[in-house]
Image 1: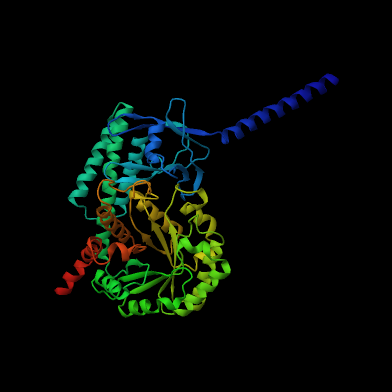
Image 2: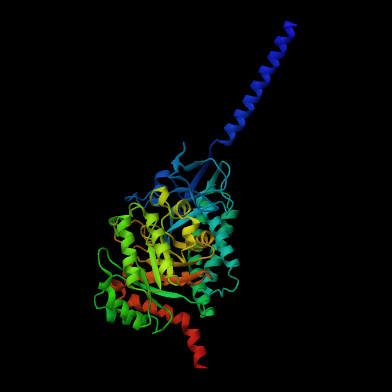
Length: 502
């Protein structure tokens, strides 16, 4: 009998041991890191070391240039920051646990400069350990994104320039697929990526113009930012001229400076309204938010909103996810939205986010901040979501389309606009350049202005916006940059003028 008890006890203990080992193995497997090893090549087919790869990603490790992030491909929230490391063979690699993971980083091509690259395994995300050829995978991912973009724009009238770029991209994608050497796959992948980036940007530019021409009845905000009252009558006259004296299209975003009473702006507001310019009042610029306590900010909101009952739109928060805004940010914008909707229910409320993804701490990355901070009750009181874009500090490039689409996914019932933008590249200060770092900044600025304003036109959920930041300094008196934006406006509205003459 004793022997039977011992055997039974042994069986029980053995069963427990097997169960424990199985549970441990399953648990361990579920939490085991997976690794993506990346072989990286340049457009000549030369293999890049980890250090050479990171030198491109960080543009020479300048300042706060580390920007690699693991993100969830479904909502673009951050899974882990700065994951790229070096494997035993000197290749860049990254580790991860979950599935549907993508890698975001800053990359560049020869003809479009730096852009934000969302590497997502052709939309499926990474889910297992593997070795990839970075340039080839990036080209495949964005080749699919480009074709998806075309698929949802069936009415796009492709130009010969676009067709040439598209066919070159297709040719090098096929060359990469057929190559029997990693170096050739990487080489052709990088060349293809360059053509894809050019084609994608041209698609957004051309389609935006075409969409605007087809939907002239859709109200677009052709906006610029006025940050001072000097010579305001001539400045506002030039804004009216910018939109060919339209009574519906011209918008000015007026920056109300810190610790200045609203009466200071009476004359510029009155003159703008006399010129039939729509006004968006910026309650407080992002750099000054930290200077106001919650109590003082509430007083400022009441003071300005009560003083200007006829302002059409109020920007309740500027670059609101910026890490420099100080304390009580959400409480401030919640109060502003609530107060405006109570006392000016017909006024449009605008919330401006700052485009940054990996170039700052994780909580302030744009989609992470939105998910963490914007409650449904607040979102219901916001009419327009705006994005502030400074690509020399946080690159965007051909990722513009997926970022705008993701904003629409987060805010499906809201209008989306560019709420602020500008471009400068000061060697030694700004980190990433767009398109070209040897041409004069003024020339690149004109190209950037055309690209961004036109791109924002091409969405049914967009109001355009734009709101070029240094209008007084960089467009006025009317110069080549002014004529660039005016020319774009006339190009979009030329169809309306032709119809009107018949």
